[in-house]
Length: 242
Ligand SMILES: [Zn+2]
Ligand SMILES: [Zn+2]
Image 1: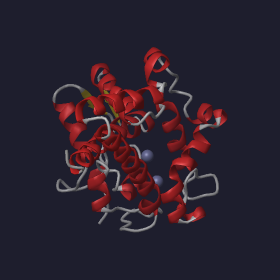
Image 2: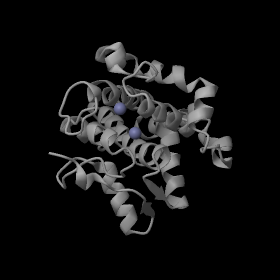
Image 3: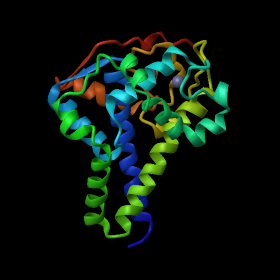
């Protein structure tokens, strides 16, 4: 098998994980801009568990702290404080340092107490990553599976870093905040690259402002809403300036 197949599969897995991260972790859980019906929420949580190993409560707590102290000293991952390259390359450790602090998680994630699914399954992040590596290996082969998985993890970590580093440094700023809008980053991160819009309207379910914007998580939310599988709670993107 050519090396290109595991790399393409790994990239596809990254796209699924950025989509579920943006739609579920970010827009639904951290900002409560959308509420998914329990069946679809469980489906999204399952894919998050398989592809990221992230504990939802920790992620939401770190992210809410970022919004509360954006580019100030207490921001968990501020390029204005640390330099964009440092945030780009060390975002994972910057995230873990704050996520490992129980006081921070309790303060910013108080409303997100673990449920029985978290206790039995989704809070066991390494198990999810192991299951996905085994599944990829059974599908692609003994070295191709781990290669696909490794490529996915590196891509996911680097794209998450890019949102926090590049997305607070380079690009357009229609709203007066330190975050930026970048079409190419939005295309790779299911809409997260419209980070300036998001900081301007943090509780809106939609990050893009035009129909042609690459806001894949918004497309998922809108489709789910039309099928009766989600309820859009806040939507203000039509007021994006410029
Ligand atoms: Zn930000
Ligand atoms: Zn946010």
